[in-house]
Amino acid sequence: MKSTVALSEARAFIEAHFDEPVTLAQLAELSALSVPRFVTVFRQQFGSSPYRYLCGLRIERAQMLLLAGVPGSMVAAEVGFFDQSHLARHFKQFCGMTPTAFLKRARGKATTHEHSALVNSAPAPRF
Picture (tube, rainbow, N blue to C red):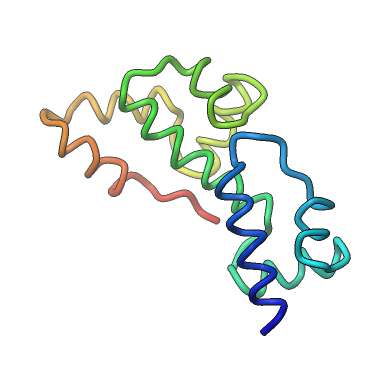
């Protein structure tokens, strides 16, 4: 029970700071666990590694910003990736397409509510 609360706090920290560098040491300390134990317990509790969870959050936010017309280079910095190629590499890994392909697909949608449907129907980040 105690580790579940600690893991929830670590997950909340990731969600609040996804656009910043987040280290395993920070998260493990927040959870009062060793780094290896934290990674193991996090994976058991949430079904993915902490890093993969962090990247998934970044990709979800990147999708929203791209649909809002924010340039890719700015999106990368805004969501915590080093540069646009780092964003593109992770985007393709998580969504199965590049940010450019995602936008081309989005341009086929006519209305704003369909754009939000696109984010929801796009290949979900695989945590």
